[in-house]
Length: 268
Image (cartoon, rainbow, N blue to C red; front, side, top):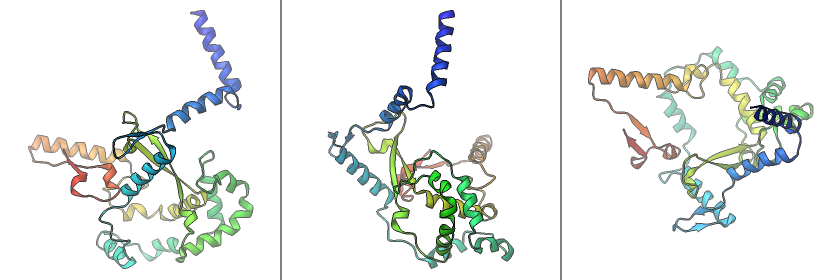
């Protein structure tokens, strides 16, 4: 249809001319995003519906406070307890040559390289400083960041404000929009903390596959989630053909954040 082709051509031209400008097109696109992220009302613990923004924020705060703090929490483990736990579960020990890079101080070159790896356009944390700020003023900031990061390696603690995060919620598809559990929390961290984490990840990158069992595939270089999916399918197929009794255990993702307890397990 010639009319349809002309309409498509006009639409392409309109997007090409206006997609990079702060005009009506951008406003319409942002409006749709705001509508998806906006929580107009929430169901309270008594079953009533509240549109009050302050109460909505409080309900989400209470929900995630309960979620991330286990009722069985007895405090943080000591360093000795952590070391004892790891000694019995890590079958491989690093040699002196392999562990030497982990003890080496952080250099200005490493900080600069970590800055380059930060993606532009990402929402910043509570301090409001995006990655572009650190890249723009890198020559001034990097010499001051190096001693700070090295002090952290010697046992100095991060400032509480550095560890703070802004939590935004993203609605899950097909879930009840009135329930706090129907939203996926995303933590927006400060850029300086992400830069430090990038440096530590680069230090650990060569040795992580040797220290982490092959059962874990996420966040390990050279491993993918599909590897364990294929492994699970093979186990199910073998169990079916050999008529071997098999149990597949799936944990509730929400409860997995606070530890495995009886009610949080689902048997399939």
